[in-house]
Length: 481
Image (tube, rainbow, N blue to C red; front, side):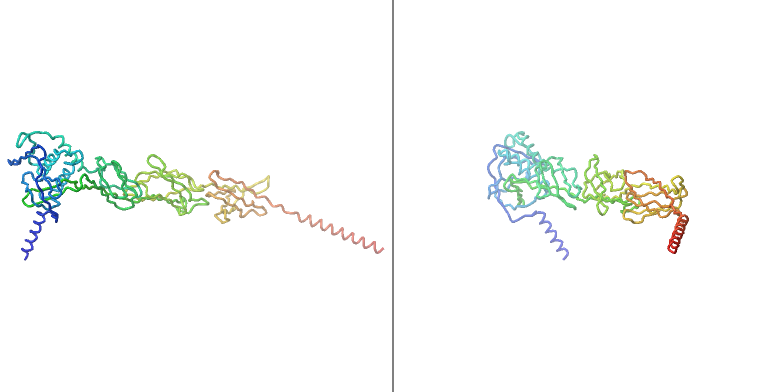
């Protein structure tokens, strides 16, 4: 049983090799008229064939045909099966044969019958490169070289057709939304086309645009449409193999584009709090940064928004510099420059950038006494309230009556909390910490409260009462007299 299966497999393989994709179409070929007075000779291993050039034609349509095997006789009037390939001929060789059939006889400018003989000679030479091929001045006559220029022209057309575009690479990486422009170094792109809507071919350049993230494969097709139908191959066992005049096979090439998303994201923080919580009444929101290319040209601005972040999406690959243009309210400008490298391996860059709040020192020199006699007042406490009236902190004077504190940007109220007995404290006062101000210095004085002399007042009242009493007695005595 195993032997039978093996035999069947061998037969199927042999059949596949010999038949070469035969299909139901078949044609009959015959020898036609001579192609002028042109003679050829071909020699291989002592076997010489010479003849007068003549046309081979398809019986049904009268289409021009060529012989492929230079040392096999032609079976006139025999039916052939159409096939897609020929034994012992590589796919590259078959492609060259179709190109000869395309650019040879009846190609624009090649209508003279000499081009049929030239094309046939080159087809034999491509199919069997080990033989010698000559034009002669008669049947098996002397070798002549009448068509060297034409043969070189035809071979150049074939060879140029086989040259594919060269973009320097087959794989490219770009950023989503970025345009990719490729220039063909071989300058043959003009003969190619693509049905892909993301590709635009102009002269020797391809523009690839509007690509989303992912890997995209693009195919380019070179179409030969100089004849009404493609060049076809025909096969008959033990007979000369035939091909017809027609269009060459389409050629394909392509390239791959890897599309990636990129992003630069910055988070703004306060240097003192080391968080997105601002100090004092400063605002991190609204800070503006600029992204500059290697020519120091501004390409994009980033503004810190409510979430204390700003971002740019889909930055092209490259090296950039990030610099702060204006800080948020109450903050000092960040003078650092940050290098940003966006590459295919480093597509997302996240930076946490800190700003330092504007700070000023509040200095208080506290004294008490009279205008002519002041003394440093220690242990006096001042409360510091923010613009909302909320308690922030307190400071207390030392033995020299001095107290200080560094406050961040904002508006504050300073309230004296205590004073020496019988001395009046200073009234509440407001201060503002702004960018343009120097340190704030205040000399504050508590003055003694004036106490009224109550003894003299009581003596005066007593005297008045005595006088009133005496007066009353005097009036009483006069009435009784």
